[in-house]
Image (cartoon, rainbow, N blue to C red):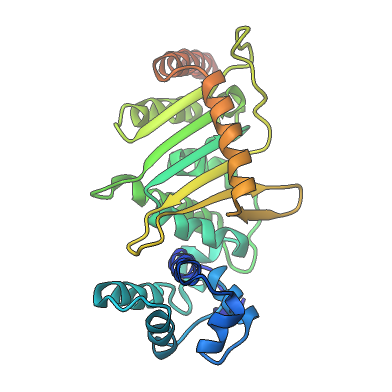
Length: 299
């Protein structure tokens, strides 16, 4: 993928700032493009995180739109200094990330809030190394990417959990995530115990949607989605995106209608799922089931 087309969190934040300046100045994208002797399509591309802009054009655009504060302009310049380095995704375990997932990985590193609904599989940010290895064990080596590369990539994502200011992570998991045996019983028990441990952190909230939900607390938990909020150092406010998976595509949605629909879905499933304390109790019961199964297997 050409470098100019590679979207990153900081490019999206810069695009949000550019859109905010244009809206505040109450002019069209076409008029903004004329300021830097460019096209409306290029401005639209910058706003969507596609493409690049020179320091000179960025300063000129900000000045002509009335944003002359030195601090704000330095913020814009800093966002332009995109942290995506050439070759970053083609070396080491980073090769394991598919192109359509790379923006998600970058957004996770910058987010202060991550909310996720999941079915069948424990979310990647919460997986143990042994669970991740078992999930990838049957995948063949492709283009030099090994199982160990895939596991290392999965574990590396979890560095955000141990940052000095980690993001708030809230997950609603179908019971299927706990019951689907992607690994032997002892590994599954370790995974469940790890989830319980994580759920005791103040910034990690885990809810379970049981198969047998009581009346009044039933809601469909269908396709997985992730809601991300990335704080902005500028004036435009935080960047909010929904990550959704379809049958054959991954989409990153930021329009108001799509975000509102996902917020509604999130409110519905979090209200229907077990409370945090109930979820922890439920996971402990599942862990005991796996412990008994592991014991019977070895006896």
